Length: 130
Image (tube, rainbow, N blue to C red; front, side, top):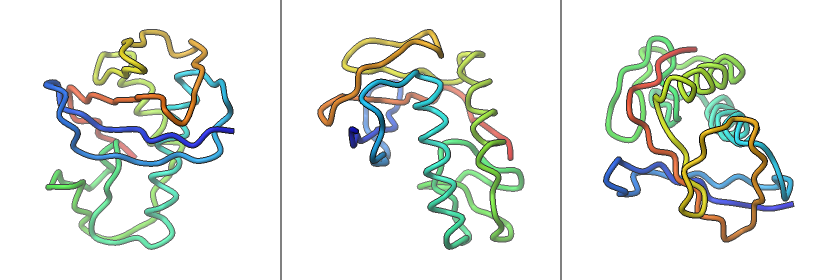
């Protein structure tokens, strides 16, 4: 099992956020990595819903702000809906993922993961949804 840090980066490569994912299998697909990342962000928020959601996908009713999305009213977020939006956005080139210097293009591509894997998510368009 691997623990990895996933970084959010701008198109120019600047890191603008990160999240640590623990107990990942040593190999998983890109689809599983995206879903795990979104599930973890939503789970952390749902433990203590606040006025700011610092996640990859903009929830319904959220407004972009520095460090996340302002929530008009704190509420529980459905991680599966958020993950489905992220997967669809990947298919529409809404973001791309680079692992150890290689841009991934296939959701079902299997990735070898280690604690030193360099994983970057580069968002090209806002991902709005659940």
